Image (cartoon, rainbow, N blue to C red; front, side, top):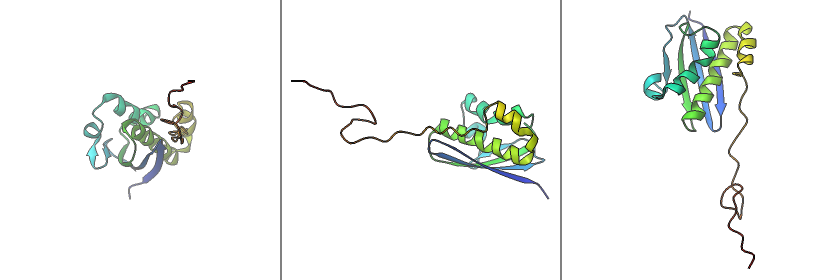
Length: 130
């Protein structure tokens, strides 16, 4: 039986559900597409691989991701967190290395809501004294 590890990552409005299968060849499938076709920008692919590179597990797992909401950067960070959490389930001893690389911390920043009487969240209309 193949061991399976799951992790959930969130960032802004993106939610990523990550399934890692042990004993794989290192392929990553995101929303039923190859990683290179879903994220054509090299930097995004590098960011997703960070937890695997940090723990030297690049070709150990087959990773299947379902990600919803947000933009590309939010989705990348959500996937990254999901992979890091799944790696901790795989081996608890990887936690200090992932923590040191700041890969287990969820970024709490969210978009501030627009307020009544303002153009945006904080920007107001031009003030006229007379």
